[in-house]
Structures are given as C-alpha cells and as structure tokens.
Length: 206
Image 1 (tube, one colour):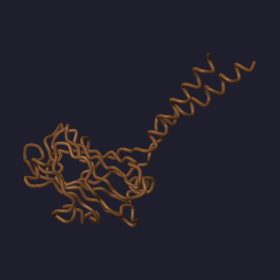
Image 2 (cartoon, one colour):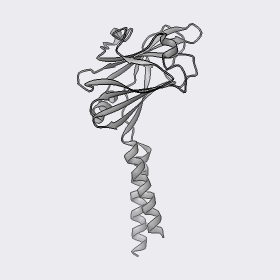
Image 3 (cartoon, one colour):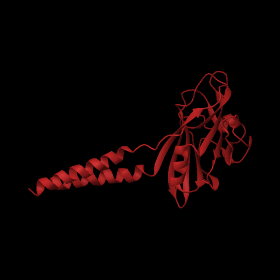
Image 4 (cartoon, helix red, strand yellow):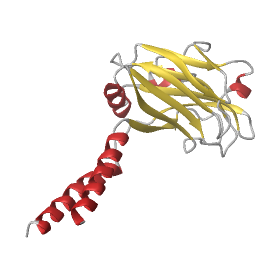
C-alpha cells in the first residue's frame, strides 16, 4: 500500500515537472516615462513549446489600469533566435504581422532593433490587448530552449508599445525583464517524490 502511494506521488511529480519544463512566463519593464502609471504588474507573455519547431508567445494584459497593447516587437539580439513570425489565436483583438512604426518607440534609447513585429489594426486602441479577457498568440519559428535562454539573458528581447493609458490616455514602451529561469515547483515535487519513494522502499524491505 505504501509502495503504491509513493509511486503515485512520484508519477504525479514527474508529470508536473515535464509540463512545467516546456513553458515560462516573462514580465515587462517600463522604458519610457510619458505617463505616471506603471503597467509592469499587468503585462506578461507566456512562452510555450508548441512543437514542430514552433514557439508560442501568448500576450496578456491583466487590466487594472486602462491600457491597450497595440504593437509587439522582437529584437533577436546577437543570435538568430527567431527565423519567422506568424499569427496564432486571437481573442478579442485584431493584429497583423508587420505594420508601423517599424521599431519600438524609444527603443533606440536601449539599442533595441526590431527584427519582427505585429501591429493592431486600426483603430489600434480598440483592436489591441485592452482587457483581461483579451489574448494574442504569436508563433515564432525557433528552438524553445534557445529562445528561453535568450529571453532569460536579455539577448533576445520583446518590446510592447502600449497606448490609451490611464487618465491621460498617452503611450509608453515596455521591454521584457531578463531573469533567470526559476527551478519549477514541480521539480521540487519530483525530487521530494524520489526521496519519499526511496524511504518507502527501504521500509518495505526491512
């Protein structure tokens, strides 16, 4: 009975570990100061291995402060992390690949150069990511592990141009925050499961 219990726990931990290893969430840092509001806490991109050489980027705006993400830019940095960009699922938004402006507004202040971009169709504020129920999926051609490494180091960057912000209704630019990939919680479950499974086996063999 104990053996079956710990085998089940170990199996669950392993499944969680495998699932968590194929997805990562990145947040954004404000690089302009046109508006008093800072949207860093409500902007995010979920990066997921979509298989077949594709990586999914799902952009979200967990609106607390009124705003609309209207342009998205990718800077490949010193590497060729992405070789193409296409549209995926759109919920409550209307984006196309390309569009203007060609580079992230104020991106030159941080040496940001756009290699790929997606832009909301006119009227941009209405068609951008302006609600907590909105989401935009972009599909990039590239290796998931390389893309995560690039985003984590800051060599690969994603920029957002956000409009209709707060009371002033102005715009600001945001860029992904470099961060070390955290050890997923599931990994600790997996390690714990191994330990508990080992203890259970020793007890059964006494």
